[in-house]
Image (tube, rainbow, N blue to C red; front, top):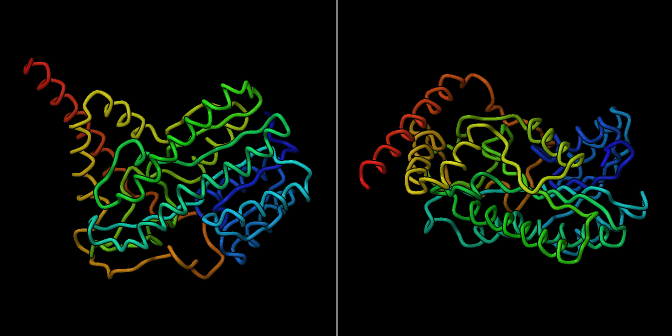
Length: 323
């Protein structure tokens, strides 16, 4: 599918990956329908899309509300007559020991990350089946393939998004719906406000765990999927290696991830008060694409990459000599 002159709906468009994706699509000549909870931030994104020469319709909505998401789809069809691409990019997260996370926060993460994808997928596929074509992009995460400590709700939701996308592809194949594609994107740690705005009950400041990639890199991946759909794409070479290695040495990668989260994802120097972040109420302001995490961490990235290779070789040798 070419991007120019298409119509795309982007959820979570007020910040981070969703915002970067909206601007990237606008820059390629795609009309946008933008949705998130923050009307002020969405309006600013719409202005930025207009500066790139494309029109953008703002429809504020909470993706956890199925009726609100259906309303987004109706507004899109009323304005543009069709929907060619739907990107489910809205996401929230909570950090904390499993038993310390309030259940209402746990449920909210599942509601936004998983049910938001369910609601968006139902709205998009209803239109796509009627049209006979369309591309649905669901945002999972490397955490959906390799679980992490202190982020149980997030990892569960992102793993479930992968399962949802697979099930949808199977149903479309059985129905011979050859013009409709469902793609899953698994980003690594991305330089967005997600970590800064997260709910946090660890008592430690949350940081983006290196290597950290740009939201524009994920947006570029999404554009490539619109042009040439693929089942599943991992964003970030380091993360691709870890996902592959987890299939061969799952126990080793499980422990490695636990070690890295405790060492790099949660600060050992800066305490943080308990907070529900932006889970239940959107934060004020016009939003942002970046979270201020990218750059200045190349040395850490090299150390992690070298350490991973050495540990991987050690694990392989241990398996070999234990036979």
